[in-house]
Image 1 (cartoon, rainbow, N blue to C red):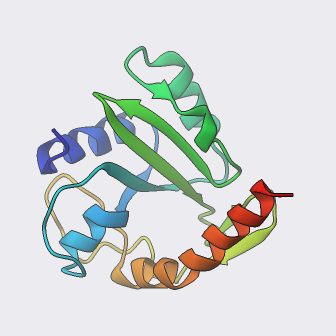
Image 2: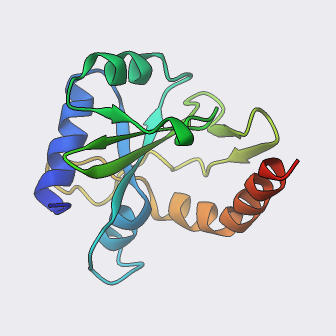
Length: 151
C-alpha cells in the first residue's frame, strides 16, 4: 500500500489542507538514489512552518487520520492513515532549524533544504544535502531521546 501513488496522494492531500510539506526520509533517499528502491514502512515529511497549528487542526478534524500520541514532540507529529504511519518533522522557514525535544537540540538544516531539483511530478522533495546532514545528526538525536526517556 505504501507505494509512490500513495505517497503522492498523502503529499497532495496535506498541501490541499495548507500543510506545506516535502518528502523526506526513506522515500526521499530513494528518489535521490541514496538507497536502493524497496519497501517503506512509513512516510517521512518535512513541514515548512513555524508551528504545528495547521497540522494539529487537520489531525483533529480528519476522520481518517489517527494521531500517534507517543510521537508528539516539539519537532514531530505523527498519524496513521490507511494503516501507514506518516511522520511530520517541522522546519522553521526563517531560521531553517528544528527544535528537538523542547530545545534540547537545535538542528540547522542546509540552506537548500527546500530546493527540489528532482522535479518528480506531484511531489516536493527535500534536497540531498538535507538528507545527508540529518543522517549525520541522527545518532545524536536518537541518543538524546534515549537520555531524556531515562531521566
